Length: 126
Image (cartoon, rainbow, N blue to C red; front, side, top):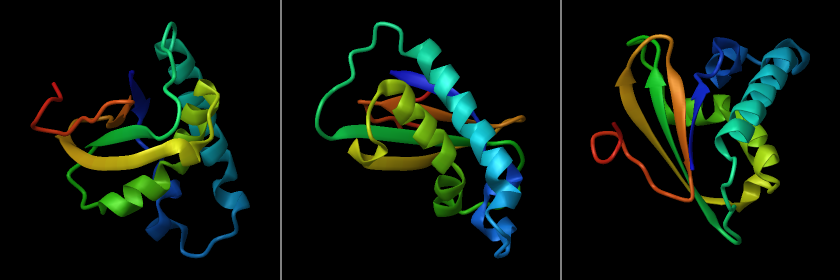
């Protein structure tokens, strides 16, 4: 199953938080989780969720050419991963391995998430 989710909001990136209190980012994280939940529910119609370890591939299509580290993009996507898992009725700890990659630059940006299959930019991602 492949689902396209919005690119994480700037305030969710660890380097942007600068030690601020969690309530400053709570609304953005809640919105990210809710958006991911509903978009996954729409994409998952008829999808049979595998059991055991479930591969998760995330390709980040960045909205601008601004330098972002992959590990920070993954950290900023935590709410989206939670919403994705919730919609599938699983615990996000079951996502393993987790593969992250870049998919170029295209506004407004997005996260292309593949559950149960491996995708990589430049290999099998259109």
